[in-house]
Length: 186
Image 1 (spheres, rainbow, N blue to C red):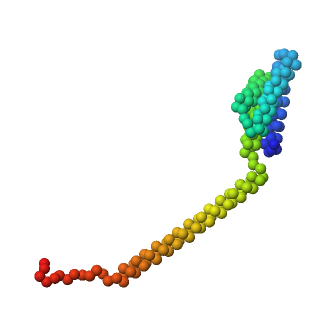
Image 2 (tube, helix red, strand yellow; image 1 turned 60 degrees about the vertical axis):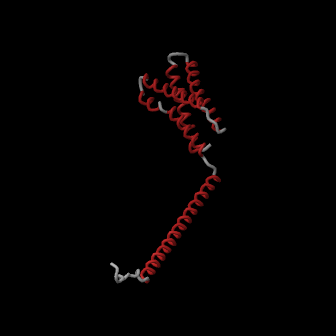
Image 3 (cartoon, rainbow, N blue to C red; image 1 turned 90 degrees about the vertical axis):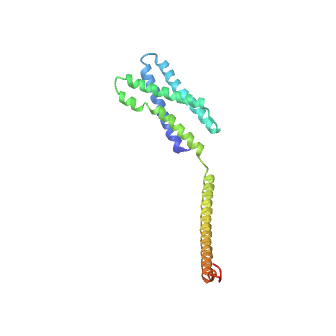
């Protein structure tokens, strides 16, 4: 895994999961026994983690499942919805809760970016090979341009020589014979 993309995704996921669980505990814990609220919070986070783990496993195999991705986004939307609902019903700090309500969606988006990074990542050997191919193509293009310029210059020289030879030949030739009128004919 590439740390450039996986570490932000892991960090955002962890923060999002903690916030979701805390909000479910604070919000539902007053309306039902706290163990039930805990199970609900862990269910949201667990469902999200399970789909994320399955998506990562499929990605490692070079595969993809639209259904699993949709379920993962659904869990992210549920978590974001819980945070928004809590923010709208909170007696205090509603702005703060709204400010972090986007974290589940952002975490899911970071995993999406990480997956794209992995699918397009190249090995150092491949990068060196690509650079070599690109340099070879630039070299071939430069040689082809030089060859075309040389051929064009040669053709221009040839055309100039032919034109000058034709002009010189025309100038040294006597003009067409003029006919003098024959006597008796009109």
